[in-house]
Image (tube, rainbow, N blue to C red; front, top):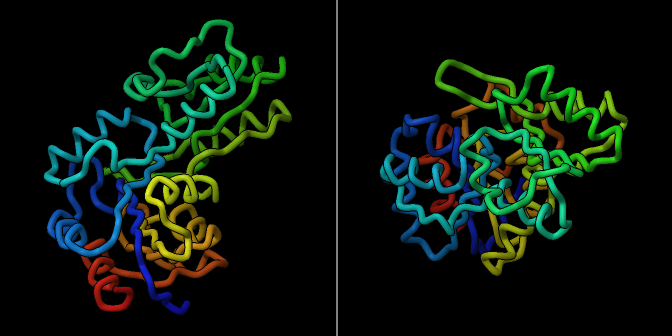
Length: 259
């Protein structure tokens, strides 16, 4: 794919791209500092739903990344906006920490089901309760539908398979909010005042980060860390602008080819 000139914004994935749990991708802190000195705007976009935005921010600060809480655009934030604007009372299939992002929102007599990454909720009793709500016309909101993600002990199931199970059983179609949805990328860029053709996305997920971004009109750089598996770049129809070893190499590519 040809590289476009006029780069004004860089969207950066977090888990798997800058860090894996509490392990930093080697050289990522320094590479981010270098990118911050460039004449581009940065936004950190994440589908992470296992922990609240404030907890995620604290983790990034602890790891040494110069990232402000307002620099993070999370699918949790997008979900709260949808719930608030729709006057919904959600059943939250979220880990306890992630529920902090929904403080102040009523959850009694739920008329919707919000699903994120919640290993504690993915059991028969809880999923069956959600299923019954959907049969009574509750809305199904998937914060994202990632198939899997990277942990230190290997790949692990994401929320996508559980959302699909609820869709299949209830006949209800979920509203999906996070990557790779076009609206997610456009909303992140809107906060920066940039157009898609002025931006690039860096991430470790060929489908959700890169193909989703390219479909939304951005360029996309795939890094071979995190959840990346050999040959992922060939499993997507909309190809990456570049495939790099890691985040530091992606930053080097931006400086050498895009700026």
